[in-house]
Image (cartoon, rainbow, N blue to C red; front, side, top):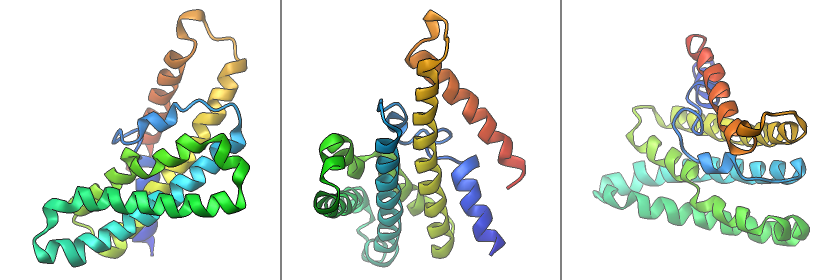
Length: 191
């Protein structure tokens, strides 16, 4: 149990897919004026990233690899993550039509997000067992979603802060991302 917990914490903090492995970085800098919209987007990303990573892992290990079709993994991974996103968007359209109208493009781009595909690809080259890879996928999805919300809150805070003119906008956001990365790497010795 502690092994799985340490894998989840390490994937969420130390080996964060966005700040350490540079997958899905563009999602961090999505400018959104409402924190609620970012929380909805982060929840959708969590569901898509975790479910796509698990399904893709099982597909790769039990179907593609035994049949010698592992060279098709990227094609299958994109198709599966896009299908999961499409199914979730159909569900959102029925239950939350206002959210879908406000963030339609961001929701549609979730299926092809490099973090979603990247975690699936990392699972294929990993030497972890299937349960450990699932724990890694859970940690990666959790870390990605938490970082989306944290950076949206940080952007809102920076908008009202007195930042020197040369550092306003993207510059202070990149500096903040670097500082957060250094802070997360500080957890490396603990996990």
